Length: 309
Image (cartoon, rainbow, N blue to C red):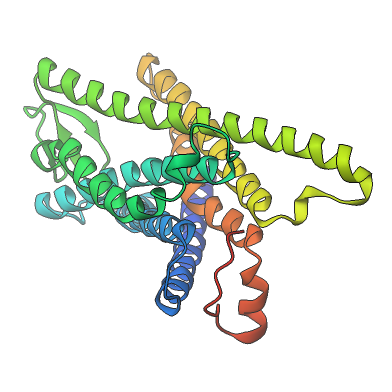
């Protein structure tokens, strides 16, 4: 095993281990907060959903990649490949839809009472659970092709493969089917990325105006940072910006890899490592921006008092 393969194997192993532990911790933390509260906070529900999706991604796609990086081959059969890759694809859609929902929710929450979004503030919390259920149904339907075309490792040259992951393979579909799937996935991703970008830009504008008003009224002695809504909005903007940058990176690098005449193991490894970046790093962003974490570590439980920040 050469140095590059060893480094890649270690990087994947560390990512999956750390990411899984932190996401499971967050999932249990928010589950405890939700169960202890008579009226669960909407951001907590969304963040719990996001942590669950991140965990599924790391376990269903990360573990096979880590085993493959360490030289394991042919350790999955066709049925397991279908199930794991299908769950991964669904979880990937859940991540983007949950991040978008968090951005939309926070934008409506901090919108001025005189804006056209004011009427949606009271109704939005009731829509969180139905939207999460709808996102599951939507992504399960869009990604159902993974159950059809994904199979186990193929050694026969007579089988047309469009993707070979060494431990699983995708059998090439017809051009019309492949195009339809690609268009559906692209439309889903572009819709959610575009919506979260717009809502994040709206939040930046609201925060800028709020900051100007506070500074004009109170001078520099008071800061808007102490307001929970402002802190929560900054957390969401950071999370969305991170996701959009990684999504753009993934799109560009994937296009380069597809159009390359030859194969580049180094670029493929970098692409794979960065592909898990959001699922690994985003829970740390949630932890650092949640004030209840300090109380949790001091008292050993998250408590029942919800904090929107």
